[in-house]
Length: 200
Image (cartoon, rainbow, N blue to C red; front, side, top):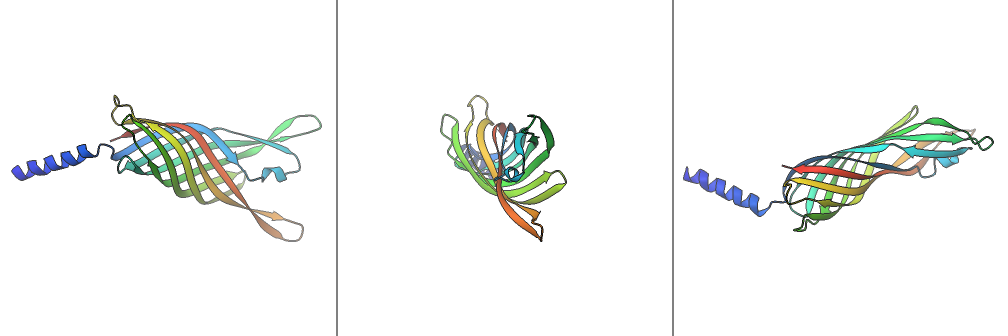
């Protein structure tokens, strides 16, 4: 019994010595930012796009006040594509582009005693890309910057604002009249978002 009490006391002291560690879960919502690397500009008509909100699910583990490992699922909503007629000024819907990404990233920052934590994220993942009848998937490189705040009165609850972007290559086949070629576009999709996480 004494040994059990001793082990419990040691474990409690370690936990108290490192209050910044633990698993956390969260969710966020933001605005989508899409860069097609000039793909749509190659169409023979004027094109514009507007994107829906993005949504995030977050899970991670904080090792200390500096390093965390974080996984995210991000749905960037629909990017709606419109074609514009220069003769009459009318526009028509030409379809939508959908992005979903799954990423694993290092979250590197510093948690100050006042609860503020500036951070950067860098990681890898995969993208699910759909545009009309065309779909593709591949790897992404995730990068981001943000600021997190953990109020002392709300132990375990953190609020964050950040911009994170997923960069990927899209190979698009085209026919030049003689044979089919493939052109690579270095595209990116990102989000400014607000999120809340809870550390257990």
